[in-house]
Image (cartoon, rainbow, N blue to C red):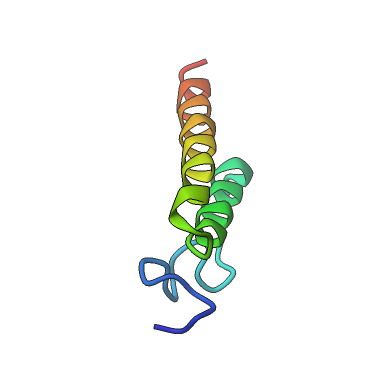
Amino acid sequence: MSEAQPENVGAGQPGGNGEDTGHPAVDAVLRSLANAARLAPAEQIAEYEAAHQVLQETLASIDR
């Protein structure tokens, strides 16, 4: 595992090598989670909560 990429984000996965899901909000969340992995654990909580909120809103908007 390189220092630049978290263990769970790899080649072929969104956030891993520049490939996108095609949904801008989801792509932004994946990038923020990759960046959060570099933060101290206490600082990651806010990032994970924000990502969760965006993903919930994105899923809810699909039904509209």
